[in-house]
Image (cartoon, rainbow, N blue to C red):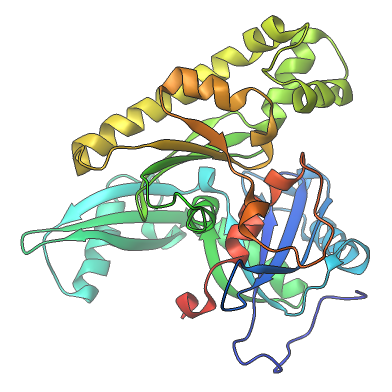
Length: 357
């Protein structure tokens, strides 16, 4: 493709594609629901850019990312992206989330009450935030809510980039929401689950029981794992990356040293997951027991990670292969090592466009 695609009126249900801007990388994907069977991938691609173009989730160098995007669409798309209507992802580690309970009230009053409540726990003025909420439970006595807020500067910096590229932004989701949308296509999505989405520098944790109920974030992701292996084994960054993806925590001559290097950061992850499970059980009761842990994202492809977490959490853990949820329709799929990195872009692409309006 020579440029960003232009709007087309050919489709009755105007399509969208997912656009995931990570720490130094871009991933895009467009899928279509054929009405039966798995969603079908129309096009996808990924490229890299200088990570300094983003600071604390805010795009500070639009030109660098815009150039990388144009190159991606010109030379690196597998298949085709047929629309300029885009759904973007906001990093969950930069969002504020909270489960809340309020008395029954009209929708307008509820919105105002959510904003007032948010001011009590978010260290930013409400005018500097985009605030959204979903109702997770409702009785005659109370309304249970899941509230999410994100600094406007982060969202606005991405909206500005989309405008520069000539793209029409029709939806904004957190990376956690994208993970939940993706998990809805899993054969065991009806079993309460903990989703752990490993990004480059952090891991987003979600307790999902048909909807997002509890969220959390801990420092440490795929790049962090590589750095720790590099420092422990005294090897180059490239060698550490190969060791991580080929051996990871699994059996190897350096297994003990690798486990020693990664153990502190993974134990912190396990501690946070256990805390969230306690909170979930206290708030929502234990009738719906969490029965699985699903890892996803670029950092989830490390051998031995599922076994490590299964042992630490005493809950069966498995890695999510997002590509098992879709039909590539003859397109060349990425390598096994690269498949997990498309989890967010795929989750965004699978969002039903009718849910956007």
